[in-house]
Length: 79
Ligand SMILES: [Zn+2]
Image (tube, rainbow, N blue to C red):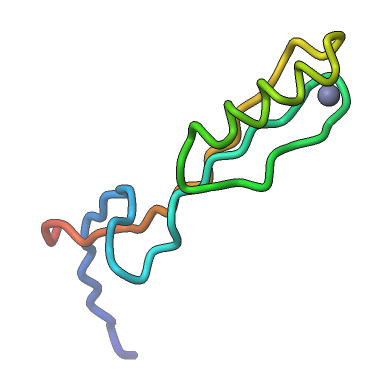
């Protein structure tokens, strides 16, 4: 019978700011009808879309912001 030895390492989940990470995208969704902006790297693009959407649809005053941000586990100390 053989015995295996394992080592464990702690990891921390952090926002991925490496070059290969996907860019953070911001989009705004109308809660009244479900339409949404395309998603952009600038959050103000979504708020501008919401302002235009509200002007065209005054009965749609509520919105939900969606933020897509990449995360990755980074190795920490060996346990
Ligand atoms: Zn709407």
